[in-house]
Length: 187
Picture 1 (spheres, rainbow, N blue to C red):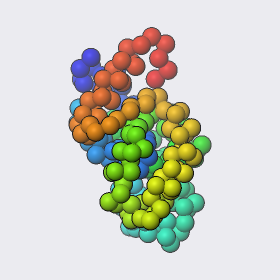
Picture 2 (picture 1 turned 135 degrees about the vertical axis):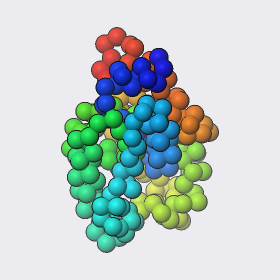
Picture 3 (picture 1 turned 60 degrees about the vertical axis):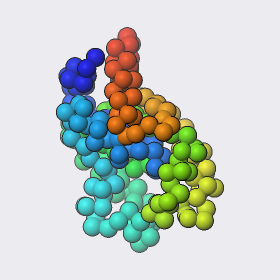
């Protein structure tokens, strides 16, 4: 199935990319959107634009619970649109209310190995409010353990290693095509 056929079958349903911080959602999303003729939105970028604060500043000034509330408001607004690929924040899956919105679209878990996540995050952990430069590995391990069960609720699980974002987008298209061709698929 080519991208045009896949886009037609999707009928404008939103594709939500979920996964741990550093999994490649924001870098993969534009390639996936372009292939489908969709628009791309990075949820964290939209939050920063709306609040005029960085994610780090929201966490520092308001705390995680206020950030999660803003995140839910933004995902609700995004959910009213169509023909989007959305790179969500890593913790969006931890709020049950968000799943009601996410499952109106197709949820795709970009799932790199723990070692790949560490490699990707080690140089920018200072930008990640839930990670510390000195506590990257224990903090990441804790988040992986807490979130794994949420991510596993996704419609597709795309395991990735050293692929480029464009290659990950192609993997997603391939797996999505297979899933949509499978009889009794719940997508």
